[in-house]
Image 1: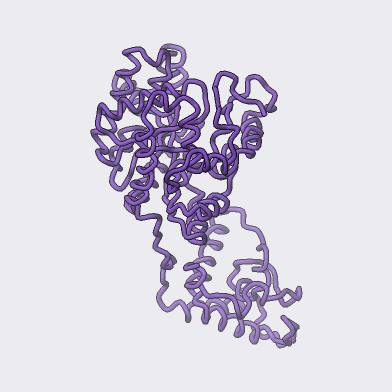
Image 2: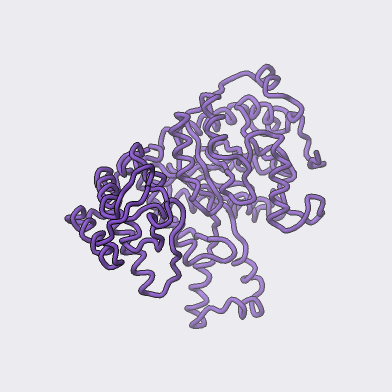
Length: 467
């Protein structure tokens, strides 16, 4: 496996067992920066695999911080619940202060024209095009709602190849959020890595970024430490620790996890190549030339710290404290606790409305007088008899409002000229759906099964929502 030739990775040859034996100590830890398969063509591990591994290690919590999206939340919530590991909702946002720059252009020139700016001010245009990464965690459901707002604005107003947020947007919705300073492409690390790391200008720029976030987020701002196995990261690690100490800000150890096991590194490299429409052999392929971004145990992290040069710059006590701070942050977070009560509008007198609408549809289709018998799920029934069976089952399971709302959506779509198909899946077996014009197939005429659509032993609406 190809590795970074300039990075001395002495811990890589150790197995988990050897790391435990050579570098014993505390084992408890919480992953606060991770990417699952939902970080498209970047993360390898599934939520289930991550949380299962946490449970095996008896780790109390795990955050999932996808790139600019939050659609892994349902799977993470269910995986955390299954394996009894606290799920911390989060996001690695694309940070870009383009909005501030855009407003300045509008104030100066009366408008903002990206193409014109690229010609007249290429340096500024280039800056607007660059994104930094920032790790955002939700302490509670207030933080979750605020992160949703930030994410929505990033997609609706900030989208330019990526959904971009900006500092003022975070500050406006800061309640309930914990901010970690980010990976090597974070706003602080970028200042350090953009040129000579020891130059005064870059150190001042990095400190300014730290001060900026500390002023807004206070004790909910942490300096994020990583050991990704990339050339120069030891220097960045040392500088971050020094600046955190200078500004009295706590540090926290993160793994920037993209896969469960080290061997999965090659899968991530392949996905990165797919994302860039090239091959893994392409010398221009942009990827992390390191297989260190997996779920390391705390002993493996200790081995990386001790053998790969970090311990020569920073005391081991700071490393241990940074690992302990993952647990502190996990304790600060209530975990993701969604309100699973039904969200459907409760239609007044829904039962009688559903019955009337169904028989009205049967009459409009000219089937109310038909007395022919049809075999449905082993039963010989007329149209009216089958309707009685279906309505009783829908009402018993609490679906009255649901079907009326679905009817309204389908009929409104047809009235507006939106394409609506004749129906799909097991819905085709419901005569009530046919009478409500939710679908266009007569299930009795075609011998379709209603029990396949909604069997007697299937849970009702309340049960399904609470699972």
